[in-house]
Structures are given as structure tokens and as C-alpha cells.
Length: 264
Ligand SMILES: Cc1cc2nc3c(=O)[nH]c(=O)nc-3n(C[C@H](O)[C@H](O)[C@H](O)COP(=O)(O)OP(=O)(O)OC[C@H]3O[C@@H](n4cnc5c(N)ncnc54)[C@H](O)[C@@H]3O)c2cc1C
Image (tube, rainbow, N blue to C red; front, side, top):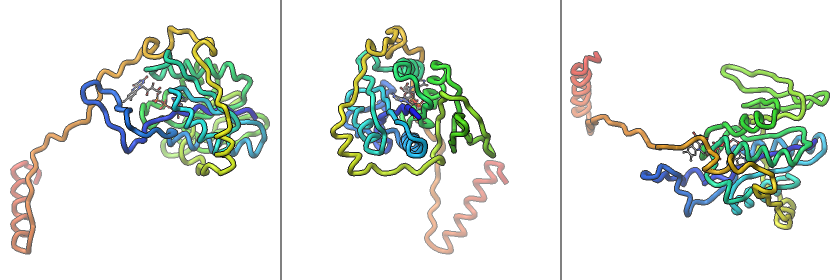
């Protein structure tokens, strides 16, 4: 089986801050990691390769630094990696990201399966997987919690509200996976050594024969016009309880407040 896994490098979520003026993410000085939900797609891809043979290729679109994420995927057992890096790709929305990845994947055909994470923890749209499937003309299963190969078909179990749905997809197909599908392994020492030696293939807009009109900020129909955290606009009143006497006073005070608000 030839499996392609698109992965994204994201800022470590516990450190993410938004610029209140521009509404964009403050990336300077923030550590970058593999999108945590992509560890599950890597694990599934490597397990399928171990079971059925073949190779797993990881692909990422991002700045040169994104090769660290690809190296980590190699250390986890992926065989090869491609980094799509070009100033023209900067500022891409989900359409432009899907388009750029689709051009790169066209160059990697023939493949049997594309495995995406459920969503990226920064952009958080979950649109790139299905967008990529649409542009490549592939059947898609989103929120996949189990994947099997049966008679050359992909049998995907999808997590749906209140249950599961089983789909059968001809190959090549694309699935996006949920955490339930696997327990990601840790990179091995041998894997780390292989990753260190591997020269990651870099591809530009020209290499993938992309139409510049669909690339980066200019080729992105979506604009994030504002991001904000809702403010809780409630007047609070703190009633302190120190002993039995203040406890009964507090209860009386709460009853009065509830009566005032016609809640009781
Ligand atoms: C606060 C905020 C809000 C945003 N809102 C929007 C919006 O509403 N609409 C919009 O179009 N864009 C939006 N963006 C931009 C968005 O982050 C980028 O378009 C991004 O390139 C792809 O979308 P995502 O991060 O949501 O990925 P998702 O669609 O959530 O990612 C799903 C999977 O796609 C694959 N993938 C995603 N990006 C890459 C990549 N660069 N390389 C390889 N594989 C990848 C991975 O397998 C990943 O697990 C927003 C960004 C921010 C910071």
C-alpha cells in the first residue's frame, strides 16, 4: 500500500496567544509541534504498512521549520517526507491549503490511501481533509475511528452522533481520523537516527505546477476579520461564609437575591 499523510506543524496550544489588534496568532517565540491530532493519522498509516506492506509518505505545507514535524513522523516509522515550502504559500486559507496539497499529491500518484488528522489545533476548521478529497476526486470518510482493508477496498467505521457508520470505499480514498483509532507510538532511537540522516525533499509552487492565483493569501477567498474572547458581563456579589452564623446569613441573602430576580 502507498499511503500519504498530510501533517501540519502548529504552535504548542498551551502557549497560543492572539494579537488583540490584528486578530492573528502570535507565533513568535512559541514552540512548534506536530498537530497533536496528526499523531493518530501517522500511527494508523504506519500500522497499515506493517500489516499490508508498502510505504508511508508524510507531506507538510509550511515554513522550512516544518521539516522538524516531518522528521518526527519519520522517527515514528514513516518512510519518506515532502515539504511544500515557498513564500507564495504564505497566508493560505483552507481552500488554498487544500489546493496546494492537492497539487503535491497529484505528483505523488499512484497512492491507495490519504490519511488526515481530524482537525488542526490552531486553525481548527477540519476543512482541509474533505477539501483535499474534493480537489483530488477521492471518496472520503471523515471522523474515522477504525480502518480495515478488505478485498482491495477501504472499510471505514465513522464516529457519528450516538453510534457508528460503516463505509466501504474504493481506492484511492481519503479518510480523516479521530483519536479513538489508535494510540500513537513514541519515536524510536533507530527512527530518530534515520530521520536525522534523511534529506527531506522540498517542493516549490513551480515544482508542483500550481496556479499562483490559488496560492497563499492572494489565492484565499476567506479572511479572518476578527477573533475575540466573549466577556462575561455579569455583576458578581461574593458572600463569605466563616461560621454557622454567617452560613445562615448567606443562605438568607441568596434567597433574597433569588426572590428579587423572581427565580423562586
Ligand atoms: C483563529 C484562526 C481562524 C481561522 N479561520 C479560518 C476560516 O474560517 N477559514 C479558513 O479557510 N481558514 C481559516 N484559518 C486559516 C487556517 O488555519 C489555515 O487555512 C490552515 O492552513 C488550514 O486550516 P486548518 O488549520 O483549519 O486545518 P484543518 O482543516 O483543521 O486540518 C485538518 C487536517 O488537514 C491537514 N492539514 C492542514 N493544514 C495542513 C498543512 N499546512 N500541511 C499539511 N497538512 C495539513 C492535516 O492532516 C490536518 O490534521 C484560520 C486561522 C486561524 C489562526
